[in-house]
Length: 446
Image (cartoon, rainbow, N blue to C red; front, side, top):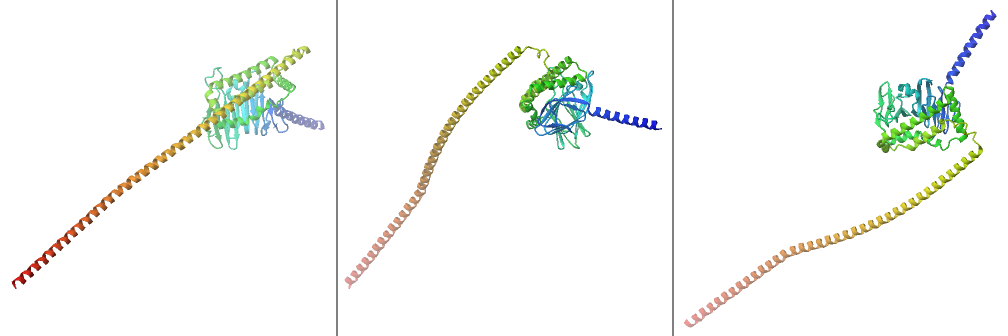
């Protein structure tokens, strides 16, 4: 009885230990490696560094002004922007057949995806879950920004008629209310909770600035990167992980080189296809080049061991050559700076001269205008005076005529009166003379 009990207890212990081991294996399933990093990026219980492994179901937190670039085992690239929270929910990959499935969820922040071998084999096998719905990749490059109650998705991938014959890029933005297909480079669609995704639109300058701002931290990553020794160690780690997945040295080298060549070609095609769009939107090519350089620095394999076994003299020669090159570069840089300063000084002088000339011409113009205004004012004043005089003269003329008429009338009246008076006097005199004659006659008769 005791033996049976001990056997049962042993079996229970074995099953529990096996289950625990299985859980650990699932939890520690390798997904990829941290390629580039800047600022503070953490998982649940550790702070990440370049070369660290990323496991399934790990939540990656990128702090403010921070970011990281994860190289997945199928050669996909996940770039996580500032203030972001991303989880790798599903990662199934067979290196021999390139079959598999990738599901990642973005709870907040920004994620940029460049698809790899899994998407190349089956374009529908890469999906990104966001709070408002899902983003179905179709073998391309895209970026998503998740904010409170809203998700904006930007398609970057190549267009239909690209010169390299690459698969045209597309992203299916959808939820239970509806779907929107992004199939034109630099087109954007927004999605809010409880609503169908908005229509695909061409991205504006302001929107593109917001997308680039989230990835700004990784531009600085190259400048504040690791030393040569650290980079070598990082490369070794990446190679070891790829070897563990069943790749050989030559395969690793060729795959990585081909992947980054294709990525570069895709970017060139995009820029060629969308020259007018990129000029309008002012897409920063330097950012893309820096990120590419970063990826190549991180992912390129080490030089062969033969270089390490070379004699010291050759190394010394190489160092001297490098030093000479550096000096030459510095001299060129100083010369360029000097030339630039001179050009700037000349430009500034030219600008000052132009400004003074403009001021002088403006002053002359203002003076001319002032003199013209004065002349016109004087002319107007003289005209006004002349018109006033004419009016006064016109007014005075009828008055004089009236006065002359009045005088004439008065004179005529006076003359008439005088004549009447003279007539009366004559009549009176005649009467008096008649009376005197009558009196004389009477006297004579008597």
